[in-house]
Length: 313
Ligand SMILES: Nc1ncnc2c1ncn2[C@@H]1O[C@H](COP(=O)(O)OP(=O)(O)OP(=O)(O)O)[C@@H](O)[C@H]1O
Ligand SMILES: [Mg+2]
Image (spheres, rainbow, N blue to C red):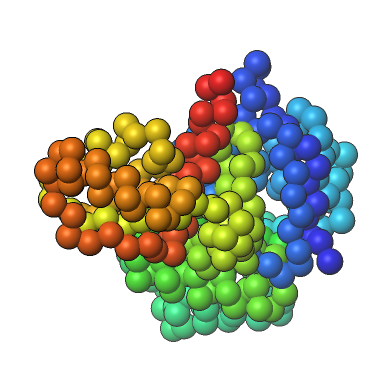
């Protein structure tokens, strides 16, 4: 069952198209990742899906209601943690919970029950009188997420929830996202961290307002990249990268630590040409050249370059 159905959703600011006819579905209980660089259109899309920004055209059904015509109903179905969302630093943990609980219409027994849940998942039992400002970043984010679902919505939208959070806390935060998903909540999460795509059931890649790929991380690695990726360890890495990136038969090059990734259509032919152009023509010493399983980063570099070339044409 779909909990979100997006149909040609578009937002223009004047003549600028921030989100361009995007369409996709999100299944109930899935973790749906929306991945894109700064300015790609993630926040604009999420704000339309939450019913707080009116679309220019198109529509989306969120929790059974239209964002175009029933945005007030949509708001009752969801939790939302905006990119700039923060708890009140000058309030205690408990005061923040009480405040947001009230915003969502929770009082008395229900509020007390949900407060216990929030404190438990944020690892803050017995610490409700602490000032929110003094919490470590990771705990604060867990608290913010727990509060965003204090009213038990079936869908929660998280806009870059782990920006500026250290990797261990990020991991912790994803554990909570998984728990929510396992309990049936649909989690729609935007990020520009590639590694987080691995934690999502589906990742959709948005570039300059357009969706350019979608699938599980396994599908993205196999479906979109038919080329062979060769990982090359060699001397004079920067020169080698420069040389290879100028060759027409090399589709993409990128650097991973001290190694080069070169994407070629045919493995045998690619190996032969790379050896020739680096070794015989330019006296670069190749220590190793291996075919590798592409990383998501390889896939995204490939897709982004393809899309950028298409837009330039
Ligand atoms: N109210 C607005 N008026 C005009 N342009 C806007 C407005 N809001 C967003 N934009 C533009 O729309 C584009 C998409 O912005 P958006 O905030 O959706 O991107 P994003 O993917 O969330 O980026 P980031 O990773 O930086 O948060 C950007 O070019 C932005 O400058
Ligand atoms: Mg944003």
